[in-house]
Structures are given as C-alpha cells and as structure tokens.
Amino acid sequence: NAGVTQTPKFQVLKTGQSMTLQCAQDMNHEYMSWYRQDPGMGLRLIHYSVGAGITDQGEVPNGYNVSRSTTEDFPLRLLSAAPSQTSVYFCATPSYFGDGTRLSIL
Amino acid sequence: QQQVKQSPQSLIVQKGGISIINCAYENTAFDYFPWYQQFPGKGPALLIAIRPDVSEKKEGRFTISFNKSAKQFSLHIMDSQPGDSATYFCAATPSNSGYALNFGKGTSLLVTP
Image (tube, each protein chain N blue to C red):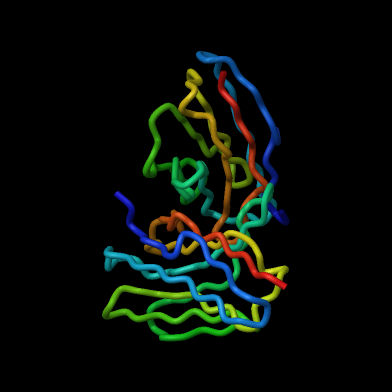
C-alpha cells in the first residue's frame, strides 16, 4: 500500500526465536501503530507511537517490543516467539496500512 | 474487552441492493470513526470516516450514519456491486491518542451477481 512498507511479507520461526518486523513510512507522519489480525478477532492494537521517541502499549502488548528512533521507522520485535503469536501483523499510519507480515511460529 | 461491537458477522446482498453494517461503542472519548475495506491478502484500506459533529457523511456510494446519543454508527453501501465483496471493519479512537484504533471484528460482505 502507498506510503507504508512492511518486511518481510512471510516468515516462519521456531518457538523461542526472536525477530524484528520492519515498518517504514514515507509520509512523515507522527502517528504509527502495529496491529495483529487473527480469524474472528478483527485487528487488535499491539503498540503505537505518537512521534519519535514516544511509544505506548495497546490492547495486546505482551511478548512484543517497539522503538521509534526516527519518524520513518517503527520496528516490532518478538522477544521469544510463541505459537500464540502466529498471526498477520499490520503496521499503519492514520490513513494507510501496510500489506502485512504473515508470521508462523512452529 | 471489545470496545467496538460490529454486526452482522456476514452479509449477502444482491447486486444493486443496499448493504448495511452496524457498529456500537461505549467510550465517549472516541471522536474519530473510520471504516476500512479489506480484500484477501491485503491490508485494510481506509474507505470513509466521520467525526461526531456531523450525523452523516457520503462519499460516492458509501455513506456513514452517526448517532451520537445512541453511540452507534453504520456504513451503507448503495447500489452494491460484486467488486464490493470484501471484509469491512469499523473502528473508533480518541484522535488525541495517536489514532490508535479500536476495531470491530469485521463483516464479510458477499455481493451476488
């Protein structure tokens, strides 16, 4: 989608592994968010940021860390992957969502 | 706790008909109410949004109706087309919270030819 780029598009991890989901935007927007989407659950907010250096927890933050060192980038870190974190992850600005990262934890 | 409740879960409409999806919320701090359309394998796309100072907003075939006193809002898709078949999500947020959205669980819309 225009303006928000997520990498990778697909990833398979083993339980206990760590990884970082990348998100970059080119709209110079202050606000960015991470969501996970699970069947029948809609989209749930993990973490969000209102500007560089400022982050806050959403509805389901456990097991995830974020940082916002620049306006453009908002990476999401899985500290020790668990099967319950198998999901599709979306990064967003107020107007645009990325196309998602499909993550499977074995 | 689901802060935004959406219904129905699924909807089948004939081509040319009106699709109606409803949402309700409790948090009176919410002041921005967007609707998103999502196709399989893609991220949600912002369709239309409303703020509580107006009761209706129309963009093309898509209309949001907003009832502040009832804390409800709805999406109407007029002259529904097969290309409208997608999952629709309502959301709500206090806009001073960085647009951190609270989503409904979604409605799967199928428009039949």
